[in-house]
Amino acid sequence: MQKTFYKVADFISWQKAKSLRLAPEFQRRSVWKPGAKSYLIDTIVRDLPIPILFIRDRRTDPNTFESMREVVDGQQRLRTVLSYVAPELLADFNQERDSFTVKKSHNSELAGKRFHELDNETKRRILDFEFSVHVLPSSIDDREVIQIFRRMNATNYSLKKQELRNASFFGEFKSCAYLLASEQLHRWRHWKSFSEDDIARMTEVEFTSEVLVAALERRVGGKSAIRIDKTYDKFDETFAEREQLEDRFRFVMNEIDKHFSSEAPGFLFFRKTVIYVFFMFVLDASFGLTTSLTKKVRGKPLTPQQVAGIKLASDRIKMKSAPEDVITATERRTTNPGERDRLFRYLKKLCGNA
Image (cartoon, rainbow, N blue to C red):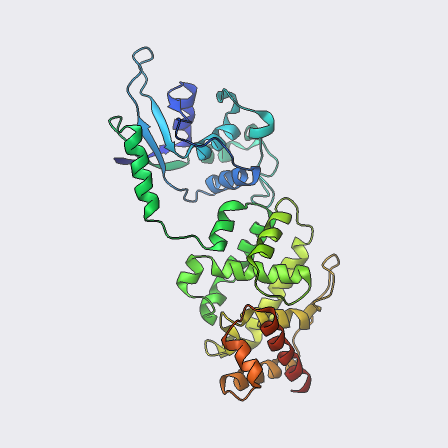
């Protein structure tokens, strides 16, 4: 097996010369949604890494003198690029199924534009983008190819819920959650809320998604993968509340950083198990959980009384002098709605009497 690099322009030239076979029998047919296609083009424009492609050399065509290449893994990625750059080269191109443009949530400068409408520099960036490619020799038959991929898949670890969402959605809500989570990376690390392994496996993105869902629902709730999935799906194409929700999320994070970062990493409410309740409490104090997202509202900074109450709650829970049910709520079943509500109400009580 040989590892090399090929430009987008190389694949277009091979397709034009009819020396590229996109869909051998063992490959799945194209099933990507427009959002996934848009995300790929934006990734290419930004010159970010894309998973390795696998192609297999085939015997040279004696009539055209062309070396044939067969796409073993990566058919959907290449078909997406061809559909965008040179759709006329796809014999089975279907306008309704294959035509797409880049979404605004992925790249506002390219949004809605076809390839021929792009400026020359952007066109060149796409055409010169290099795919990392593993080339299998022509001597490898289909049975051996299948065995290779079975072995590769056998060593993969199980994907977490957020990793599956990352592979399934490419629209507005996903872009919102990933943007907000990435903006706070320095804080997640400073607060020790999430480990490097957590961040590598998108746990901080899942947390961000969860509090965004709670803000949309206007209530403190239990952790539910189904509710998060439904929200990703509901707001995949359009997300009218996005701007307001992003503003509120950033305001809350700034308030937390302003008043409590100096307490890190020992501050109890920075712990992964309870930071959800902490965030929701500050959100409620700043905007009111029941306040509609359809109108712009200026956030209220935390008062000295509220800051003192939160710190007192942290100290009492750590010293085991808080009510037993509150201590229990921070130690087990921290994703349970009842436990979260109990801790939320305890914070409200102390902040009202601090």
